[in-house]
Image (spheres, one colour):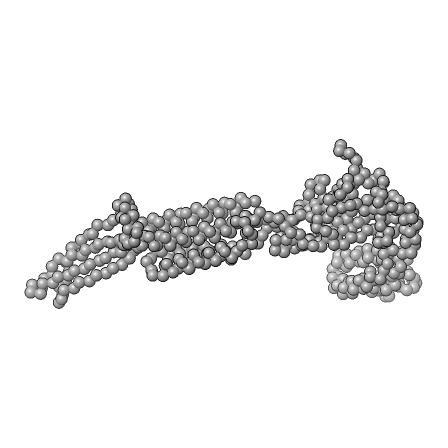
Length: 467
C-alpha cells in the first residue's frame, strides 16, 4: 500500500518519495506531510525482509537531503530524531538473514571447505614479479584524537574478494554471513588489533566484503631529544601472512576539520597497506611554563647586578634554586632533551652572574670636601675638593684583580679641584661615599649577555630546522 494514503482514490501519477510507488497521491486538500508519511511507512515496514529495510534507509537519506535542500531544517530535526530512536529498536529486532537465505547457505556449505582459497580469475593480478591473489582495501577514517603521546583512531577497513563457490542464483539481496558458516578469510595481521569484524555476501556474484573496525589508541614514536618540539608518528598496518597482496583502492577521510588540522594522515606506499598519523606536541604550553619563566628569572638576576644592593646575592641564589627545580622536575623522557639544554644553559648563566658579583664587586668613589674660613679677615680661602677612587680587593683573588687593573689600565688617579667658597661661621668637613659599576664588572656582564644572546640564536636555529 502506498505511504501517501491508505486508499488509492483520485491518485495522480506521481512517484512516492519513500516506498517507490508510482500510483500514489490523494487530492490536494488531503496531502499528508512528508515526515508523517515517512513515520507511517516506518510503522508498516515488514521486518522479515532485510532488503526492504535497506531500501527504507536509503529513501530516508534521500528525504533528509531534500528537506535540507528545501531549508526545512525544523521538520528534519523534529522527525528524524524520533526516527533514530525507532531505527535503533528496529535494527536490533531485524534478522540479518532470513530462512530462505539460511537454507541456501546450508546447501552450499555441505561441500564447502573454508581452508581452500577461492580460484576466481578476478581475484588474481599479474606483474613482472608473478601472479598474486589481490585483495582490494577501502579505508574509511572516522575520527582521530590525540591523547598525551598517543592517538585514538576510529577506522573501518573494507576488504573485497570473490568466492565463486558461494554464488546463490536464487537470492538477490546482500546479507550478513552467520557465524556458523565461516567462509574463506585471508590470514592477516592487524596492528593494532581489530575491535569488531563482520562479513557480507552478495549471492549473485559471490562477492564477500569484510568490514574490520578499529577503535583504539596507538602508541606513537618520537625523537626524545626534540622535546618539547617533537613530532609524534603513529602507524596502522595490515600485513598478510600468506602470498596475498593488499591494494588500497580508496581512502575516505571523514574526520572533522579540527581533527584534520591537529593530526595529519599519510597513506603508505605500495605494496604496504598502512596509514601514518603525525602530530606535533603542544609546545605553547612549554613556552608558558618553562621558557618564559626562565627568561624572566635570568633577567632579574642580570638587572640585580646593575647597582650594588644587599639583596643581589639573595636574588641570584633564589634564581639558581628555581631553575634547578625546573630542571629536575620536568623529565618526561630519560634521554637528554632540548628542554634540558635550555634550563641547563639558563642555570649556567645565572651561576656566572653570581661568580661575577662575588669576584668583581662594584667600585667605590669617595668625595672629600674641606672648607677653611679665616674669621678675622672674613675672607674665604681657596677650597680643595679631592676626588679619589678605590677598588675593593679582598680575598684570594686580590692579586689577580691588581694584575687585571694594570693590564686594562683602568685605574683612576685622584683629581684635585680648587674653588672659592663663601665664608662661614665654623669649619666644615663632609665626606660622601657612593657606588658605581666598575669597568671590569661591566665587561664581565657584557660578555655574559653576549654569550646568552648567542645561545638564544643557536637554540632558535635548532628549533626552526629541527624538522
